[in-house]
Picture 1 (cartoon, rainbow, N blue to C red):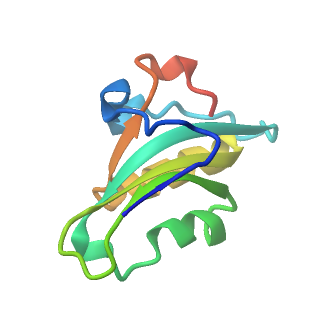
Picture 2 (picture 1 turned 135 degrees about the vertical axis):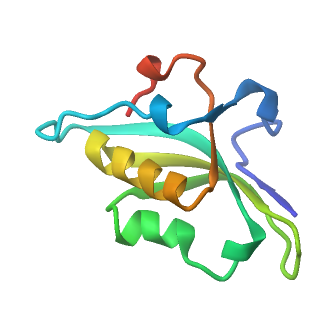
Length: 119
């Protein structure tokens, strides 16, 4: 199942994204409270299907999460893919990305230069 944002005419290829590593996550200035956003794609391993991974981004890290697209079957044995827009402070986004990284969730970014990211 592929749920696509109706404002986009075509699902953007994963080729436009690169796998993010922990060293790619910039360290935020803890005093900066300006709202910002970033777009990521994540691969959630099948062992986390019953865990509230994305819900935790909202409840534990205070982010607003918009789904641009998702690929996940109801009773599938495969991993789930999510195209997400994360909105919050740079510190909230940084903390959430570390949380996802600690879970070994693959994080893909659409920037080749992490310094250009909007988080």
